[in-house]
Image (cartoon, rainbow, N blue to C red; front, side):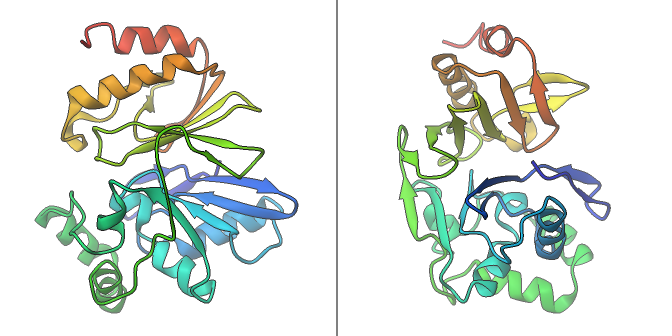
Length: 237
């Protein structure tokens, strides 16, 4: 897990790196402008390969896909990019990102240089080639870290996906869960268009033996995960 702080956004993000045989796979790419910071954090973790072997996207939100174009460009357009089919059209620029509202546009314009903002808008439009090279569905096992099981967890976005690493009993939750003040919570309601579906998705985690949860917002949670999931979904029908 990388601890990625962005003072301009006033947030800390937690992309995940999965290392194997000297290579690394990146789960989520941060906001636009995070490319260099992520690369430096990966270097500090001891990985010498200059580019990821693949990028896996949990969903289409700006803070998860924002630096994807830079990773693709640095790879010479050969990077393998994985995402759920439901979010693929948004990531590929066929449809506008669901949550790119005027307020988000204004925030980006303040954070980024004019050229970087222009490049970002162009990258997620029909002007550029598709980004996603591989799609997955619920139950697929991705060939990273000895196997990552795809858990489709819609609600936060239609294609939101969490990833379960059975070998370490670790759930990479994306935004399906967050950690706040040391406690595990459901997704942020203000950023979750379909909260009912999102909480039903959380209930799917009961099928997995989870000891550690990595949340993109809040970081790591260790504890009685199943008890907390029961509490979060107690009133879900």
